[in-house]
Length: 279
Image 1 (spheres, rainbow, N blue to C red):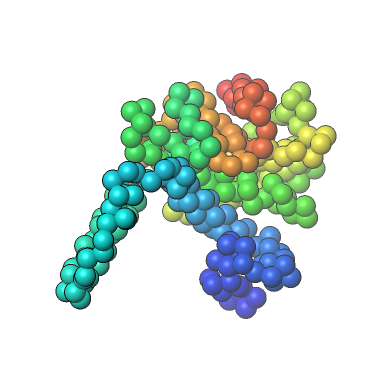
Image 2 (cartoon, one colour; image 1 turned 90 degrees about the vertical axis):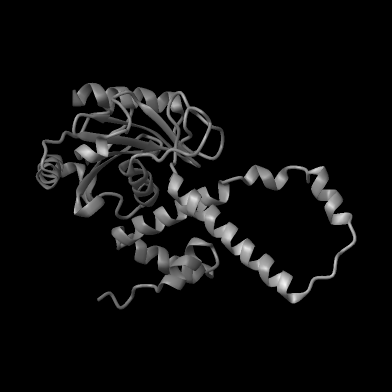
């Protein structure tokens, strides 16, 4: 048992930016030493940002004329039975709305043909409900957000042990992996790490850095038959959530997600270089 683990209340206060600077620094240090918890916190923060972004445009929209008129109407006297009935109706309505929203699923990015501006939601082609991204893409974005800024322990095994790193990750994932060379694109391999996936599945992350200390990560997941159904084809799919951008693609039994804070054009060049090497 980790006696120094912050409780859930403290972790949520940390995510909401409500801790004093000294306590926030302590929690950040603890998360840096506990990558599984750090990935969970990052995923919760992303989920919170997506929920806050839903229908945010409505807040700035003008009040509909019929509602404005209704506000100016004389108030009617309510008796407590009417108030109770109204409260019950409101509770039922909110519950139904939440259930419908949860059943539609949330995504972090858009496909090449379905880009939306600002919020990073993957929308269906008919502009309807948000379409969920493959789970490994969301996990890749969360892992990048946690480890890319890390200064002391950005990787688990450094590039100086590249052969050992690739052999180790290949053994854990059960497939032969390759750490692509991105020297021609201006990025050197820093190393990599093992990360957890769905149902105890192992996943790999390779990290690269350029001369300006800009980092990008390549996330590799072994895809099951169920996970491949209805997901992206081999063609690159663009994702964008705040400062984290990237491309992902699924090729056979493997899913790849490239994440960075770089322009789309530059990331596309890197993604193509990786794809060619992995072929």
